[in-house]
Image (tube, rainbow, N blue to C red; front, side, top):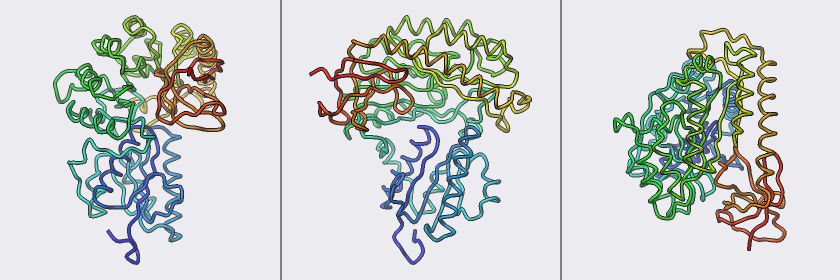
Length: 437
């Protein structure tokens, strides 16, 4: 591919949205570089003449951020700063026809499974031999691994199946190869991601195989942490719990979005589970994996949510005392089941409900963190910032969870190393610690 004036092509990939999108960008990066193309990710100097924007289309705020980012590069193209602009990802997949009409300056829009078509724009071929050898844009000591694409769940509020399609699991052998390659390149932690980890294997093996995948990955030499994100509570594969307990390199951590606690609301949301069954599952997980940290996310303001049902959710949060918790305000998404319902709860009320939940969680998190003072933990050092080395325990995923801050003036630590610390102090979402020499 040649740009204006036969300049050499230099590509910058801009990623918006979740870790699953980041993996997609890393795959684009790997394929372009494998074809001899000069490519960067989130280039700070912005000297590239071709830009690929990988968009998010999950909820209103994410969609607006994607649109604003595209428009910024549309302006750059119109001013001659860049020569080509391509857009891919969830927003592009979902609203391709509308975007093509509204943004004719963009050279092409691509859906979530159109990597080969995108590569053709660069006269590049999809190289199968690069599968499992993905270049990572995160610090090299941790990497996200997408074990499946798409989702078969019927949740009322979610547009992901519209953008990502049905669940497609990757083969265990392929994932083990990828993890092994990551370790060879210095990775110590892999974070398993999918829209629904617990569905893994049903499509290609005919049965749930997450337990087998965990066993195989935990046998990879040098892989010190394996973390599970985005498990689904309905039909949860409890056979993974003994493996999590027995295998030292599987983190005592589980990210399981529950979305609500009212049985009536769970039915409206089409979650396939009741409050009672949810409580039984949480009790089983905590019994089988002592010391596990459970992260969850909730939705407030879904059509039909009454004040009484919201109070049930508040009581549930107080009772369960989740180690980690986040809240989304319901977003009315076209072509979802919930879009047929009236979005009758005002934005101000959705915000109030979200604030109430987070106030409850802040008090819980503060109390749980205070209990950690004087205790020792294994910590993975992520970065140095503002006079501190900053790391995480096995109970914390990057960017979304708590962090451990270690004063840098008295100690030198290498990024990507594990250290043992004692907790000296704690706030609602952070721990302050000292290294045990």
